[in-house]
Length: 209
Length: 197
Image (tube, rainbow over all chains, first blue to last red; front, side, top):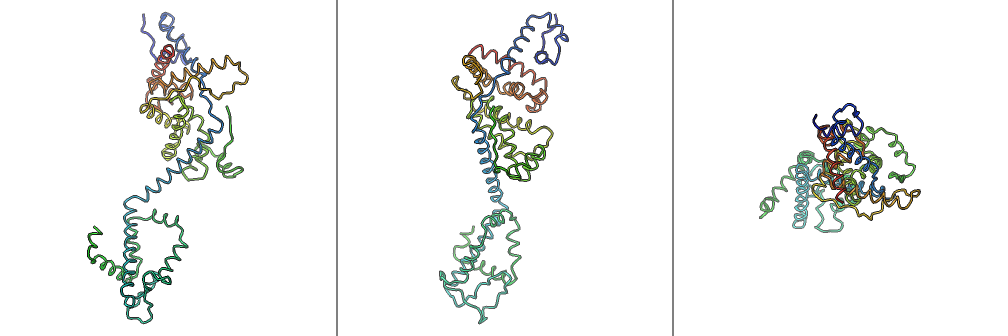
């Protein structure tokens, strides 16, 4: 007696991809014939079992859920891009330098308003020597008519937050270097002087480390 | 089956009509290019089959719904890896099977209640026959959800998604012989589970 049929042969026979005549063993083996009959019966029993149809409104609900999940995913991806160290570190560095610059300028104005010249309004403005009589001293810190504060207010009013964040997201490791390189020599010297003074303050190094 | 026309980009939107005329490959390209509504259309076209695949795996609506969402989210993330070597639906089945296999190995499925009434069109069917058919369907679905994961995947993809053994082998990273053996043993186990119920 030949060996029983393999699972693969049973499936081929049940699905009709192989004719029974091609397997002589089947005619001589009751066990295999019964096995094949069981397989066919189970296939027939499972074939017409439908999945319960959900409410007609469900499909729209599913699409909305997927869309919300995709939107959240996109937002997370964007945040992840911004939070990458080589984007975040130079961006924060630039912001920190600007903050130190601004705080120092304000402090110096409050302490000795007549000694410090006015900050240039635009980056391409040439820094005029301190002795120039045409310079207007910075307004006292907190003054309501401070032109520097007015400038910041004007920029803040017209700035597009999304565009700014896009710029941050697109910044690279060279961003702070590029910003520094865009300054004129006088501006660079002034920035260097201010940063040096800030670092020389008691406890400044501990705060930065 | 019910069909509900759903549009996300607004009625009469020309861009949506334009998207609907795209081939599958063009639609994927549109998704990758970030065109509004393109991925919505992918979801709309495949949500029913993905949901049904998930339902047959887990045997209940809540889990099937969560899994369907997960399948589409993974598809969205991995859309760049879709090379068009297979159809988009086969690619989604592959994701769906992986998501379901991960779920069923991590969590035992909650079986549907025998009293759960499926929303099927039974207007012209006698009450007794309808009840018997529904009860039998629930028993079979519950039995399928108790099968070992690979046998369940093979049975569902073969019997309900009507994929070839070769396609199933591709999805399950298996051989055709192994797929047929899994299918054979799935049917044997199904008979055993049903006879014990």
